[in-house]
Length: 184
Image 1: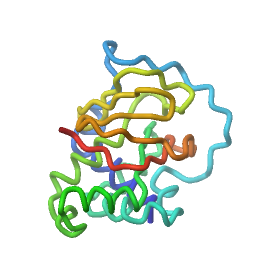
Image 2: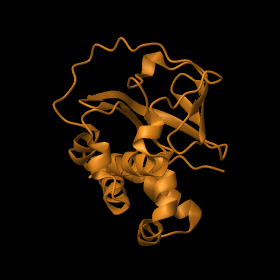
Image 3: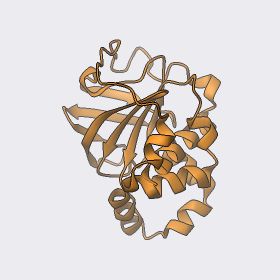
Image 4: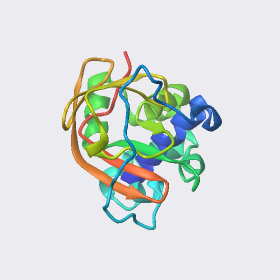
């Protein structure tokens, strides 16, 4: 189910900006990312399947499905970097915003925007050790600030912690986060 969340976020992001328009999501003025030298074995699953295989991503998976992004995020030729919020992270943001899951999923434009804020589509997936402090432009065109190792800050000024990194997939990498990223 959590994989569906990741998939939904990724697919929404790709739908929002258009897959072909997102070949380089990090302009030169932003943090440069070196070519990853990741050595962890890549699973035989894509980013959506990784989310689907983990019950902690069940809401994310539902969100990706509601946004119609499963096929986009399953693209075998893509190089996604996904910041995947857990079910607890989704429940927290629903409480903070006063929305129900049904209300969020019914607002496809908002759901797509939020999911797009969790995806980078670039020439290579970005592994944790390759991230340097600075700003990253996400698929939604929102900025994610990398403050210190393992800490991120969204445009709303909320600090996000990386709970687990470098879940390698056939079409990218998934990083587990403790909060849903929100634009301003």
